[in-house]
Structure formats: structure tokens, C-alpha cells
Amino acid sequence: MVLYQTNLKGIVIKKSITSIAIGGFDGMHLAHQQLFLHLDKNSGIVVIQTQYANLTPNYKRKEHTNHEIFFYPLEDIKHLNGVEFLDLLVEEFPRLEKIVVGYDFHFGHKALNDTDDLKNIFKGEVVVVEEFKKDDISIHSRVIRENIRDGDIKKANSLLGYNYKIEGLRVAGQGLGSKQFVPTVNIEVEDFLLPKDGIYVTKTIINNKIFNSVTFIGHRVTTDGKFAVETHIIDEDFCEDISYKISIIFLKKIRDNMKFKIYDDLKKQILKDIDDAKSWFIVN
Image 1 (cartoon, helix red, strand yellow):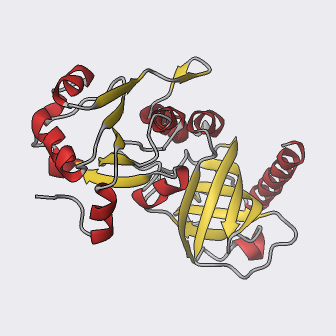
Image 2 (cartoon, rainbow, N blue to C red; image 1 turned 30 degrees about the horizontal axis):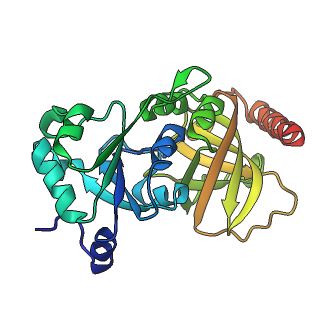
């Protein structure tokens, strides 16, 4: 019985696949890309979905690969032992000849099976990709998550191999920006890991156009105390015709969130943040 595939197109595609890479693939980062290099022309990526994946929600992973992607929720397969899991894959990918995994790959009930077991159970070729490092750092999704939570965007981007991006829907702000400070676009983010509270040099994508920007994440401790993700567009050619869906690309952290006693001090700091961002864009 074919599980975890609900549409006819997906079933047809699976029947043509000859090689797959298996993993969590949260981030689709540089180490993951090393696995994908070993895939053949008729290939697919098997994503084991877990609750920890919030660098690249399912619908965003396709941005980072040309391979077909198939999602298997961990909750649906965690009861299978190693042999049962491989039997499932062979059944769903009947032409499967090669499996590519990372050196630390485990599978089966309670993750009791390792790469040696995979080689013994699977009748085709098994490629185990060794640990991949950059700047002497072993690249793992959990390391990148820690970097983002710490606000170390530069390091996170280096390990990802691209600039970290979040996406959300435009929402109403508190209404103070355009009146007392600078105008901002407020977004509500649900599926992505947010960087540490603070001010960031960013690029904001609106209506498929990319603008230089400064983005605030955190509680507005000087004003209403509410949590917000809001971005100020610093490009002069920006107009107010704003789409509902907004994307923000993080480039550099400027500072931590701060509380000011008076609004004038906050406005001065905001203007300084904007100047710092403009200076960064001039040399980068």
C-alpha cells in the first residue's frame, strides 16, 4: 500500500525516481547540498518532517533545489523498524537504485539503525557523505538555529550558503511610526524561526521588488510593549503600494533592543540605525 502520497502526479513521479537523499533538511544548507550533489538525474529528496524544522517551512524548501521533494512526517513512520522503513521506500520508489545520507544518519524505531545497517538492508547503492565543515565549523541545522537565535546572522548566513529569509503577512501596526518616528511595514510571522530581538540591516521583498531596509524584531518596550516584526524601507524609490505577503532577508545585526525614557531619544536612535544601514549598503 502506498502511504504519504495523496496525489496522482506525485505517485507517477515516484515511479520514475532512481536515487533519493534522506534527511530532515531544515535549512537546505551547505552540508545538505553536499548530499544533493550525489543524486542522479531522476532523483528526489525525502524530507523527514519534525517539529524542529523552522528554518525552511515545507513550502519554501523548493527554493533551494531543483530536485523533487517528498515529505514524510516523523509521527507517521517512527513506529517502523529499519527493515520496514526501507521496505516502504522501495515500495513507493520501485526504481530506487541509490540512497544518499549523511554520516550521522539514523533511522528506524527509536533511531536504532545507522548507516552500516542501511548498507546491509538496502540492496542498491548507499552513499554516505562525510562531515562537512566551513571555517572549521561542522554544519548542522541546530548550529544554524542557535546562531539565528543569538542574532549572529553573519555566521548563520555563512553556514546556510544564502541569506536567511522569513516571510509573513502584512498586519496593522500601532500607528506611531509614520506620525512620530519613521513609517514601517508590520508583518506577522508564523512558520519561521525569528532572529534574536534587535535591529537588523535587511532587504525587504514587496510586490516582487527588493528594497534596502532596516528591520526591528522584539517587544516595543518604549511604546506599547507589544511584540512586533516591522521593517522600514530606506530606498527612495519605494511607494506605499504594499502587497499582503512580505519577505525579509537578514544581512547584519545593528544592535539589541533598547528601552528609551522619551520618544525623542528613540527617534534619534532609529535615525542613527537607518544611517548605519545606509553606510553598510554603500560598502557591501
